[in-house]
Length: 352
Image 1 (cartoon, rainbow, N blue to C red):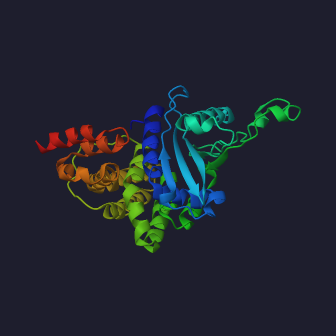
Image 2 (image 1 turned 90 degrees about the vertical axis):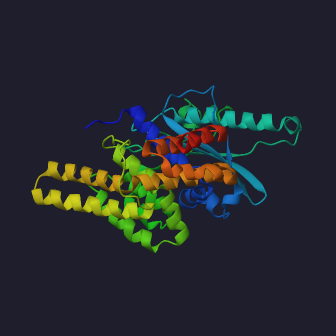
Image 3 (image 1 turned 180 degrees about the horizontal axis):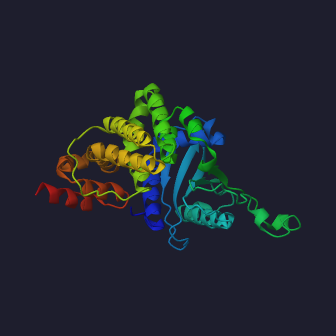
């Protein structure tokens, strides 16, 4: 069984979390779940603007993905800077990295308001830096900047005083995420599932999913395909070129995923071997994944294209029905970087 390299694993997580958290409605859920300081303002999707964050002069390797949002609350604005940290090792220089990012964000803001920035009354927008940690070890780094400076108490008037918030997913049990009763909570719980807990977790998710409002079910359906993909790829590489014979909606795919994993788990237990249990679960995950992957990927790609390009993509979008799983995945995984012209080129190739 081939294991993914660290770089490949990072790429999977980068794409998954950037897709989910680039959805303004999912960011609203993120705020409601994790950021009480903003939750009280009743933030809606209309209050959020997704900002540009590619700081080419700051290099930290392929460690994280980051997202920047401008959030309106009453008559004010705040930058919500979200750094998604995947590495299992804790970065003890995170305060300094955050400081560099904050300076770059403010520099961009000044450049966008050159005339106003020269006036006495000009002020910078506040920044809330948040590290969303999805590694395996507990996050133990200090989150106050000044505590990284030696003898800061003596020189406190000269030392920056700020902290970054940490959302450590390793310290939040799956059951707690499920009880949030939101699509994002269920997706995060599923993403945390391991071979030994996957059957229990997906059964609990299935029960809670049935209780959610239709809008929340739709949000879950939009992204469950990607979460299952990362769940499978953490354990083994799948042959994504292989055609799938049975096409189903995402919701049906998840139902088959549940049944397949449970069936494999039961068969493995009857064999009475621990190794058999682990292999059986992996086979069940793969079977459930393949049973609906093509239809799920097509639905996800169609949704992403419509969100990005609007009505102008409609004359070309039916070409998705003739694409292979590999072709659909390529578009979905590169949606943030593809231009309209490049997308049409890909769709026309299939049509011809």
